[in-house]
Image (cartoon, rainbow, N blue to C red; front, side, top):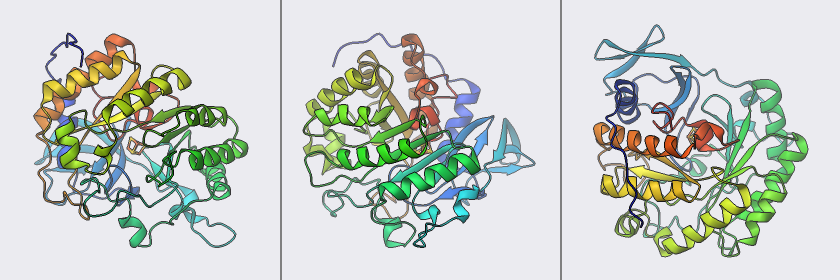
Length: 360
Ligand code: SF4
């Protein structure tokens, strides 16, 4: 890892409050909520001071929403909260009777998100990422095992028309094929772009063995890509993501570099989770290296979700989350990389991170 001079700005009051509520969550359930699934979930989607925010729902949280204001133990913390309405496309179903809500969900304020393959080769007890609940929602009957390209095209068209959706995020469980599911994602993207030309779509997958598939994704219309490592610390990876840790970090760097060449600088991102035990300075240094290579490090707090192997693991210290986020946001600003500049994807949405509050 290269040495990068990292400015150490103190977190602002807003970033601190946003980090606290990102970890502690809120007591009420807004209309838009998802449980389980891939990535951070069991959250409620709101507008927090005008920005989309996915907040954990926790009846023991000191935060509550009263008259559109966020209160901590009854005191106004200076942030406005607006619920995101239940989208109208949730009330529709395909001709063969599958509710659209089981095929794709509204994230943040204007993101249509779908896990196109809801199973993962790494979901065995010994291999599974400890924070992941990808197959829980499948077992609960809340979603389908595989979403077909025509189904996704149909839902996307309706979500744009009825609910003003402006971007799509497609993720997948890892497949046994060498492309890790990327070619199936390409078929889904192609169908969505045929139905709604110009709609930005981000895809998310593990580093594919054959990097040529990245060009195929771009050619069919994917606008950005997330290749998510979650941690750049191999010891943390082995502990938290025993299956994924078999993929060497070198493969991630090769895939990120190839993706930046294909999709462009700041159109490639990765999750970095705060709270897995990684040293904060090393996390910021790793994020800086990613930024230098044109990859957006989407810094998010680890969430101990019911139904995952880490349900009892403590959530991160909000002060550490605020500090790390502020430092990474400063690096992003210095590099002229903003999440909002990505056409689609988690960095463009920002709801699961504190980065956009900190100006990253
Ligand atoms: S940041 Fe990503 S996972 Fe989180 S709500 Fe937005 S699109 Fe969904």
